[in-house]
Image (cartoon, rainbow, N blue to C red; front, side, top):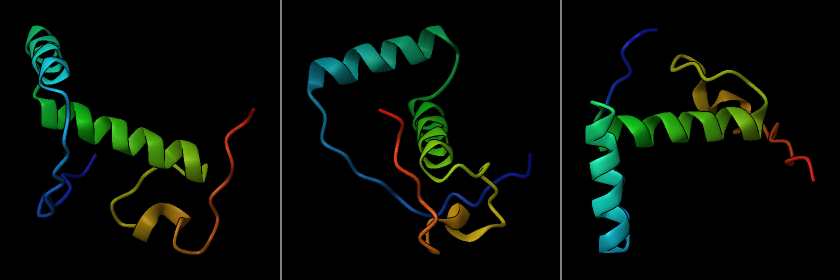
Length: 72
């Protein structure tokens, strides 16, 4: 998989206790919180668009209005 450009910053607010547990879990899996969040976002994009994520494809079809609704 090609290395994606990591030039955008996403700032979120999270409960300090959740952050602590999240960071501890990440450390126990020898991964960084940023890696986990990127993986979650990529999975969310793929789930919502129905298109495998590719950094070469702008918004993986979402810009063209090809988003699909999740199954009930």
